Structure formats: structure tokens, C-alpha cells
Image (tube, rainbow, N blue to C red):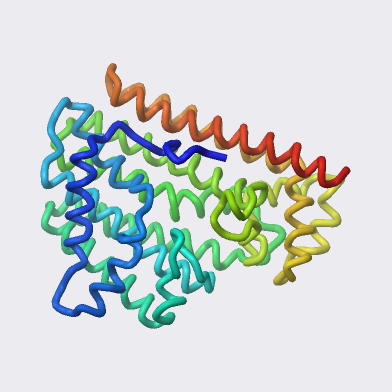
Length: 338
């Protein structure tokens, strides 16, 4: 599994500290109860990967991180946090980032409304940064909703194809990564060519990130994930490794007989073992590697120097970590089968 710093970017600690202050301040209003609910996951911490991508943009120009860039990062992170509030309601999740989920602690209605509040605050901040940033964030939110609806619509469909899967993760994950990069570039005044390269990097890296998550949901342990593995299988979300496993003549028939309906805990574990022992895990790792190469190529168009190298290394290292994790998991599942 990954080390804690796998997603670390060379963003100054002082700038990250400024980001945390702005992020916390962004959800504080006149209602103490809403303040507590809205700041619940902010206080729980997180990788802050999306705002860190925004904060990388000034480094490409050798510039300082301005308040506008910080606010751009905050607006993106608020959208991400809102999606977690809503996702946990849909998934009936009870834990998030090592703490009780908002829905488990305060109920679904509060979680939904608090998520909407975070989206409203994000929109307000984006509007203060100009019409282009505001329009971009609104379009990104539409893509997120489109991706989520596509995933819900395909639940428990064993004939879901790869094209549908890739479009859904492009919308629900890669879109926000791409937007984080683009907003950073817009807010620090990079030239249009560099902004386009950053946008392309974010889109490709977002694909790597989500494919990694989907593979690890099958092969990782609960200790590694911080939540029970196989959640996608249990919820009828058949991701790339599952799609590939269904096509395998060895495990495909047995797997197909299990899927298409909600699973018991025992059935989920059986299905997870079938997928983990199939070529689907390798296929997922290989596809992530392909997107990582695209991301690295886009980063290399951003000019020479350590900031562009850091972005390229991020994508390639995440893909390599996935390959290592998949190989260790394959050995573990083979030992269990033996």
C-alpha cells in the first residue's frame, strides 16, 4: 500500500497552513450548529490533494501563492467535501477520515443540507474570483452530478461496459482534479498554453487516482483502506477490474452468478476473491499506467524545472504504487487459495 506521502507535492508548509485557515474560515457563519457540521470533515484532515494541485500553478511561473490562488484551492476543496457528505448519505457510510460520518452523527437530512451549504460557499468564493472561474466551477459541478448519476444508473448491471465506466470516472473524479489545476493557473495568470497543459495533466491524473481506488477496493485490506474492502461490489458498482474479471473464462461464470443483486457479507468476500484472482487487477494497473504516462507527458509541456517534474512524478509514482500493491495482493490471495 501507499506511504502517507505518496500524494505529497512540493507545496510550502506555510502556504498549506494559510490554506487551512482560509478553508476553516470559509464555512463559519452565524449559526454555531451549522458551523460545527460544515467544518466536521475539515477538522478531520485529509490529503488536500486538489487544493495542492491549485497551489502548484504559481510554482511553474516562479511566483508566490496569492490570496486568489488560495481561494481557488478552497473553492475546489469545498466541492470535494460536499461530494463526500452526499456520497456518505447514498452509501449509508458510518465512518469517514477516521471520524463518524456527518450522516451517522447528525442524520441524512442535515448531511445533505450541509453539503449543499458547502457547494453554495464554493460558488460564492468562485464568483469573487471572476466569471471564468465561476463558470468553470459550475460546469465541473454539472460533470460531477452527471458522473454520479451514470454510476447510480448502472448499479448492479453486469453488462456495464468499459466505455461507460471510463466516462463516469472522468466526470465524477477527473473533472475536479482538472479544474483544480486550471483554477490555479487562472488565478495566478499563467499563459493559456500552460493552463491547457495543466488542465490536461489534471484530467489524466484524476483517471489514475480513481482507477487506483477501484483496484484497491478489491485487493486491499480493511486496515489499509480504513474501511471494509469490497464496498463497490456490495453497492453494485462494477468497476474496471470487475468488468475484466467477468470476461475471464476461468472466474467469469462464477462471478456473474453472484452479481446483479445485493450481496451478503460472505458473498461479497467470495466475489472479491474471484476478482482479485482474475486478470482484472492487472488490467486495472495497466490502464492506470497508461493514464499516468499521459499525465506525465502533459506535465512535461509545462516547461523545464522541478514543479513540472514533481507533477509528472506524482502521476507515475501513484501508478507504480498501485502496481506494487496489486502484486502483493495477488500473492496474498494466491496463498489464501492454496
